[in-house]
Image (tube, rainbow, N blue to C red; front, side):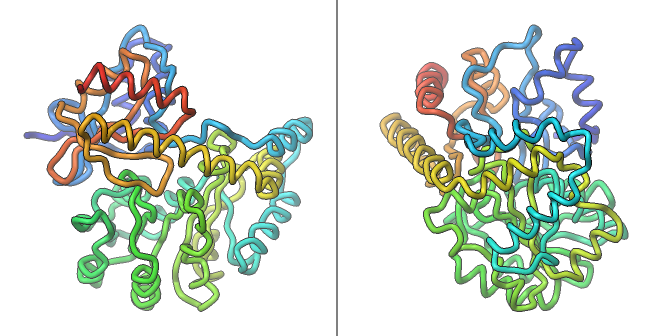
Length: 397
């Protein structure tokens, strides 16, 4: 089947025939992926590798309302009350730059992570930092090694500036094939990228195996570990790679306030890395410039709201258990998840599936990998998850 290279702006123009069509992006979760060139197949779906494809929806005109928005892994309960109050109390100061306050947030994060402030770089969401890393590391070519499937933000931007992607399929148990990834490294490899827990699969790679891999491989090439979903684990801090930075390892760890903290629309994230690695990035781009003053205050308040974090984790787990049980009752073999989303195989062409779910006002994502079509559903409120299971009953059962 032939493919076509097209940038996302052209795809948006092609797909949305009215001015109001631009409103479709957040509904369909497309904003979760980077503004980098897409390779489309003959049916208009995004082709990431020979094993990994994402089905893109037909944009209805007029746009159907999405009542259950389960396509972007957002926290339906956030931001926390403390974060909202902090944002409101400082919004009037939005005419000022937030440099002083940003340094305060950096110090707070450094203390939380057990590193020095010089090891923290801020950004408007972790995806911004993934993409800046890709631009800096690959401006002169090279290749990036990662799992397949993986979160595509860093990879697509790396490809857009001239890098080659060396995808390594996940193992049968959905963990990273660390042995094969290490063997894929060559003289042109400039970065190894690992998303753990992985997106779009929701699965984990063994902690000690990953520690050993990062410690060993980072002596040869930098390793970027994306931990956006780590805090949905009960003891997420114990599964982090941050401690390797204090050991002098060339490891970059990404965190975000978009998931467990419920601040996807407020745009705050950070990376933890060696000072010389961050200097390499900051010699070309500033990390914290895009974060607003109210968002900085909201992030500091969110870090103190332990009750909200635990509530989000608990409610997410309850919805995940509900969906798992519902899928089991319908005969679907879902993949056990450690995150705020789940995947399960669907016996339907992906674009058709998305269109049918959209008609029922439910937004999800659909992919093709491991030789199957998959639905990825984010965890919303229990009411939204019941809408989702009702829609699945109509579309697939």
